[in-house]
Image (cartoon, rainbow, N blue to C red; front, top):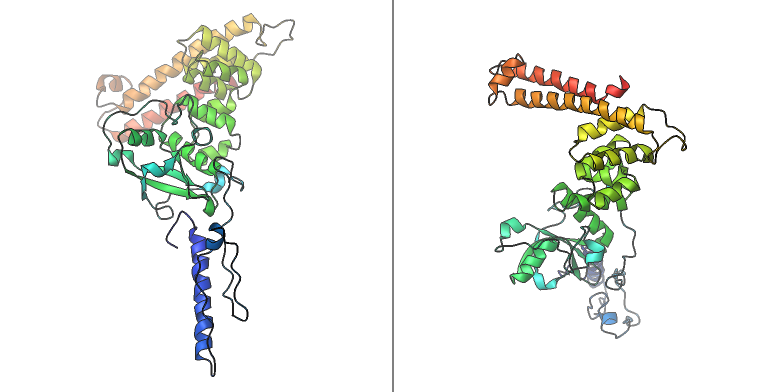
Length: 386
């Protein structure tokens, strides 16, 4: 009963209830007038005979049988997909609550890896490692690994590939871990998803890892990632970029900042994103403000026919005009952002704050000025609709 590798908590509880019911029947029979009690039967753990290859033990005739005990379901083959369906992201919730998933000491030798199924990061080795960790083992810094246990009791690392590799290298005997069990309804995909979300929230992995994860998992909606705190750069690029934009990003032709600006500027719009991508490639020093403004300006232009337009859906005159407008808008936004930073750091840059009419000793005046400047930034960001 204490072997969590064989029975889930729910199965253990049902087993205990069955034994209690059987004991109650025994006591009732023993205290009944003229009763001879219940014939003793040999206690056998559920499924023990089957696992030993002895076949199912039939009870002796004329003996009262205890309530039926729940047998664990047959385990899947190692490395195969679990037979139960994976949960939707919104159904998983905060499953790493230590109260529900206590931290345990697990022997490193008992933990296996399945990089293809569990590691969401790109460009990893056979152990699921991108860049090997260095230094001595630090129990506090190592934290808790997240493991998944199949019905056979085998443990597979879901989150902590790099730490596990270091522990193996340094011959650390045990690590702290939390376990998601298939017997409790958690699939391998559930474990992978939770591990990926934890890495993204903690800023681990690269922006390419994050973007690829969201691109391959369309079940993440804008509402869901916002609620889960995942609505960052990776989601914007992975879900909003066209194939052309995404390929340029993955091949390092444009940076993450440019890819995000292009993706958010015209989600799924082939023509506008193509024009924004070309602009980013031709002008690698252009920041997100300039790229976004260029695409906003271009969105006001009527889209010419294929005979009149270039490869990107807009004629050259419209593109050059949009670029000129973008330069002006981006300059205004950058200037306002710099003023906001100056006001917020008034104590460090009092001369700039003074020029803006802000008393560095008046917190309320600083707050109002920041709000005023922020409103101007928002107005410039929406210039094309004003």
